[in-house]
Image 1: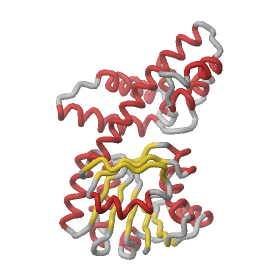
Image 2 (image 1 turned 180 degrees about the vertical axis):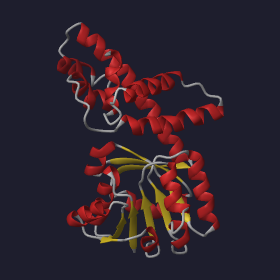
Image 3 (image 1 turned 90 degrees about the vertical axis):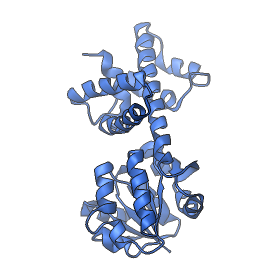
Image 4 (image 1 turned 135 degrees about the horizontal axis):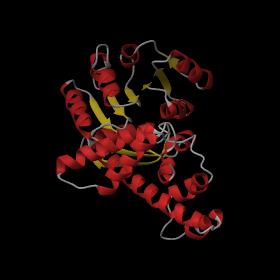
Length: 287
């Protein structure tokens, strides 16, 4: 069985690597050839010059690219996956996209005799490197079962959320939670600093209680030190939040905190902090 992976970015590079390390025959494609060469220098596999060359050979194809436009292009564009995939191939998209696109791709895949899963991930670069991602999957149960051995190579948990598009909807819920937690953490830090509390002791005191969270354990001290040159960029977070807000609007759901955080991120982008980690939200109080 041959496994294809399209998109060797921060996440995809490591995810494809884990699949290779488990002994699978992996074919990879990335728009920047130097990245493909770098991946091949670290892992066992075959580089492909085009998406069509890769998809025509693979039984399972995983994709992890930038946004809806990129996903549409690699699947539905000229010489894309839909044009060249083998009959019965399983397609798994790990990109965070709109649920509307996920449903459309599933419908197109089904019409072509292909299986499709929308499977966004959470856990960031560290999770990808350590093979500890959380996968939220939408699609047919039989497709999820077929995908599990591959998904388990780079994840600690795979949850079948339901029909096509539900994986992306769950990822939206995830991002809304992160936005709210980071806003609360930013305000908590502001008070802790104003009262000159020891931030390390604050973290130790409250991380094991009801206020505990991944963001508290992994970002509070770096926020205090004003270190933001790593992690998940606010450019990407705003893309994700746009999906959340659009989906909520279509359902008549009000997301006031998410809307507030999105506007604060926009202001931070305008200050040139667009590539900083999402925890840079703490700088909203600094001019």
